[in-house]
Image (cartoon, rainbow, N blue to C red; front, side, top):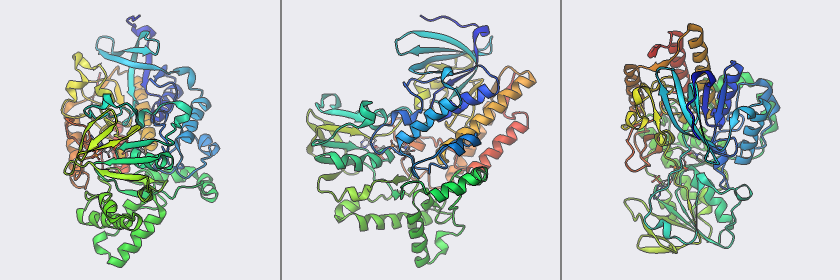
Length: 547
Ligand code: N01
């Protein structure tokens, strides 16, 4: 039963999502003495780490950096078991945070925001929440914070005939809940479609169990080793001896992490072939994203980038025994243009196993034609399967908001506002949507940093902003259209000077048929971005309209 809430019974802040963004926003709001509530459709906290239960799911930024910095007690108390934490450990951490900061009484799980509309007269958001039992409730909130996650709406390609398939269909981002995601593939013929980060993680795990694994690859990924293992006790001790200093060094990095291996300030083009090889090899041994910092210009100069790409192709050739398979696994677009995949399980080695087959379904090659009762038809051949795993990614960044009846000032629908792409200012606000803030959404550096660092930045900025508005007696804040247009132009201008426009990535919306091609992330680096946001605040929230 739905009822219209009045201003008096409302909230200060409605937080949408109880992942890492939502948890910290809720904590922040409460420490500021604001009445806040977080809602999440999932039965547990943890956001993306709740849903992505597939075997092998693991973070690609080191755990000591992919963690909250807001509480010294928390960062000292928490011990990570692995250098790159796997999903169960990340989920334990999210739950620990919810308990430690006594957040649970203000989190409504299995509750979905199904509509929200800005009420100009009351200067409130009127939100409709729907619980798992179907009951609805309307709540008024002065502010709404969308911490719904940039990678939270799974993408299911419309393969003709998919509904006919008699075997099991699973999506990596909506993995079933049985036994912590331990679906048993023993003795089965399994197909995996998709070779992005999720595919690269799940493929080696399924290969260990399945009788036969067929990998349908449209575009090969660049995969670098993580060299994961138990967290080095000495490193942990050093970091914890001065965690604040470690965090400060992270925040000074463009990516907000990796301060132990900053980019080498030489051009790849200026190095001799021997030096280049030695430096690439050294970074390969370190593992993870450090590889992209082997030389400072890998992401801004195509020729430098091509040298790094060729190094990785050399690694593929020396790892994969069948030269034809190695060639198929070798990408040709710029490395890092699609998110680099960080491997803890021997991805390339998996293709040496006799039970594993790689099928090229690239657009230029032979795409998946249709699906039958028995399996997948590609390249004129039917691949018979017992189970089909879709590792096909997300309608990233905008997908969740664009599915929500969200109406701003004057009934403006987000679907109309963003019909040509996610217009925003500083990645934090959108013109026409007063008192609505985004966390780790479009327009910020979130996609290129340790996302928790970005989350903390956004939430701190939002918290300061609300405090300032209240102190100044303002009822609402809304991005100005001019400031928004200038921010969008700034984003595009920065992206133009990088290799990021040189491939079909989710950063560009290119993975979803029909989605506007707009580069949705900010590539200028975290320190410059944080400085811009601070300047805007210091100048009385310049570029925002205050009422
Ligand atoms: O999704 P993706 P993801 N026919 O979009 C293929 C984060 N993440 O879930 O490249 C055939 O990258 C598609 O092919 P193509 C991380 O930020 C992090 O793997 O579009 N294939 C691609 O191979 C990551 O970037 C971790 O040609 C089709 C794959 O499906 C982001 O999430 C782990 C197809 C989708 O790859 C998304 O990663 C997991 C079709 N019709 C995710 N449609 C960590 O390591 C799509 N594909 C922390």
